[in-house]
Structures are given as C-alpha cells and as structure tokens.
Image (cartoon, rainbow, N blue to C red; front, side, top):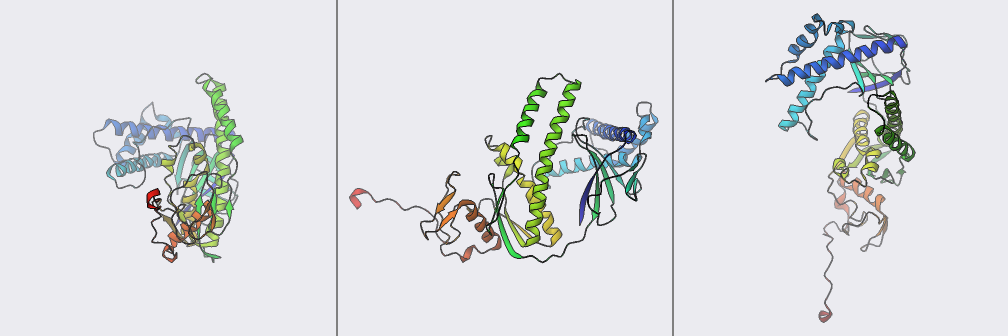
Length: 386
C-alpha cells in the first residue's frame, strides 16, 4: 500500500523565487488547458493538451517563460486536470460514490500552490532533496521514510509554509492487539466515548476561533488589493493552520492508539454533511473532524491488519439498553443519563451507545434478552376501564 510522508523545509530567497516561478507556470498551464476544454465541443486527450499548452506554447512570446522551469511539473499539471475531469464525469454517471464532484475550476494565486515531480525530476542527495531547476532543498527529517519515494510534491500553503510530500510504498505492520474489539461513539463535548469506558476529549479551539472571527471582521473593512489586507489574510491563514495542525495531531495520536490496541474497530456511519446544515451546531461539528478521524482509522486499520466496521447510521444505538435490549425510544440530547425501566440499570448516554455500536458491529445484538421488543409504550387505561 502507498502512504504519504510530509516534511517541512525552509527555502532560501533564491529558491523562493524559483518556486514562485514554478507555481506560476504550473497554474498557467492548468488554466490554459481548462480554457481549451471549455471551448471545445469534445474534451481533448491529455497528450493533445500537453502539445497545445506546453510544447507549442513555449514557442510563442506570451508563454516563452515556460522554458525556465522543469517540464515534468507542467506535464503533471495537465494530468491533474485529466483526473479532475474523470472524477467529474464519473460523478455525473453515478460511478463515483459520495458527494457530487463539480466541474473543474481555475487555480488562483491566493490559494495553496503545489507542483509534483516524478522520478527523473528529483533525487535524494544525503540530507537534501534535489529538484530540477530549483536546486537542493533541505527538509526537516522528523521521521525516516520507510522506502525510496516514487514522487514528491512541493506544497506552499496559504500561510506561506513550504512542505515536501513523498509517496512511498509501505508494508503492513504486524502488532498483536490487546483487545478483541471496541466500539466508539463520537460527540461534540466528548470527542470519543469507547465501549471499554475510556473517553477522549478534543483540544479547545475557542481562543483561536475567536481570533479568526476578529481578523475576518477586520479583513472585511480593508480595501481590496491593499498591503494591509494581504497581511491580515496571511494572519487568518496562519491561525487556521494552527487549528488544523492541533486537530490533526490529536486525531493521529488517538487513531494510532485505538488501531494498535484493538483487532476490530467499530464506528457509526454519521451523516456529517447533513449535520452541518444545523446552523447552531455546524461550527462545533466541523471543528471536531469526525470524517477525518474515520479516514485515519480506516487507513491505519489496513496498515495494521485490523478489521474496520462502519454500522448503519439508522441503528438505534442511543435508544436501546445495552444490558437487556429494551428500547425506550428517542430522547432529548440534554438528557445524559438514562434509567432502564426493564432491568433497572442506569446508563451514561454515550457509554451505552458505544457498547451498542460494538455489539451491532460484531453481530452480538442477538445475545440480548429483549431484542424482540419494539419499545412501543402501552396505552393508559381510561377511568371507566379501571
């Protein structure tokens, strides 16, 4: 299986100019190819687009500066456009799962920039990485790459930080699991409540979120294309990156701990995009990163040889007693503790849901005593019937 290893690096002033020129050329080639596709009745093939926007464009005065950068990232830019169109067409035909993919859009200078080098355009030389027509850049090797990379992507994010992202082949890790299975219930106040009784609390983003709102109000009052507005935009991007890095660090540590200790991991298939339509909870839900956590757990489960199970989102995990199977029905979110009327057990709402998630995922729901109960309340007798 393939994995990405990302390292930060600090280019020199001359390398920053060369990278800025490279990002500009990649962006122009992508946008030129997209313009041709929009103007054509039938979308041209990738090879035809490369001849038009790279080979023939270099011979013109308007695009002669394309020869100043390596040809490999330019070709990869056209290949990226081909993938974007394939995803769009597959989404229209119903071949692609998930949300609908929109028509490819033009790349902007203010967004994050990237350029990809394949084998022949880069090489690792000692502690540095040589990039064609850029030079040797020295990343911070925070961890050792397990194998030689097949490609490297140079990234400049909105906060003006530079990264090298390597694609390498990794082998599955054989680690004995301590536990057989675990069920995880995701929430807002408590990020994850597990069936073994453990709880994981996400970092507090309130201070940084308040700072972003203040800077965004400041940005709305500033003039377009002014240096002060550009400075404020960079401050907003840096604050966003702090939140994203904090959340990513928390999710990586939690997912690694869960996957390494359990043989089977059961999660609930949450409709996160539907939950975000609730304007009162949208900000809190989006900051948690439930979808990102599921993606990390699923990917690491494959890496560690674990079983990942996602149960149906319509399973009444918070409406059923985990001890006897009695269904008490839907209750308000403000109620955090529940007393089962059938067996007399008092449950914490989230812990009860996590145990039910594990039983449904592992197929142990039939072991409960009252699984056949429908949970409907009986009618109250009228006064003349008493």
